[in-house]
Length: 122
Length: 285
Image (cartoon, rainbow over the protein chains, first blue to last red):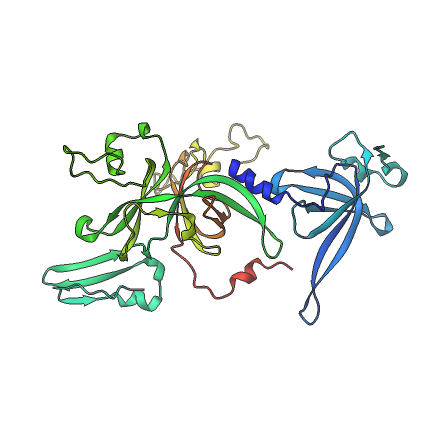
């Protein structure tokens, strides 16, 4: 397996993605490639702002899921492959103290109940 | 592509015209003759030049392509291989190239194998011995059919560089052995109901046929039995990565056999003529 690992290590060099943990509040800058009516390709960046509710996998196939509350209180979750070239960068705005790896319980909560306690870091 | 070589001393030398019209290149090519010496058909299997390599399955991972889509790939440690023997129609009745792969300790091989690999020194008692200077002791030997013409030299090294990114290849391996498997695993039979009064019938194969009329079970009836452990060819896989320095090759999708299993990689036999439609298949909206 050392060859696979060496391949994976080559992949793991995206300096724009910090170490992510469940409970982090992040702004994911996702590249979106659109084709307009004239058939021209256009690239823009869309920010997905929410809470990381899970980080899974390792190596090339690792991904993380971000949950945010969209308009009208609709919960939206999006899963990003960590090594996807479609991710321009990820900013961590807040880290929270959580007791679980997967924060699925947030799906059943809304408003104040869905808050997470902030982790104090020096 | 049918061979245009003619056989000297033969009467009628022909080609199978039907093959030419269907353009079924992947069937291989050959010559047909019908003369005083008899009727015959000479098959020249394989490619014009040697294009094939032996490798070891390393495992699977994923990479991202130009459209940023994740592509599942199998990484193969391909080569280096050495040409151990070149077979010619004059000597062996057909033309082929024998490749050797994977260095081993000489102690792991028999004297006969070492002799074939050119490892034994020539001496006064053994003036006939052939010596392949740059070839190490090798574990596996496999043959590739190659048309007469551009044959490599014995002792020549073959690396993953024989393939290019985008090539279509067939990968031959030995499937993982599953032991004695039931109909569900072996032939994709359906499971029977778990409830509604069933007992011990959940994974049973069901009826093996009719009683009246046939009164027997037909040959070839799919039943439980040994599964896996046999040769399997994965056809028409796309090469996505070639790294001759590190002897790496990656193909799209899975490949038969366990990790560290021997695989044979050769050009795809049923390659479709490229109509530029390939890009459409993979494009994402």
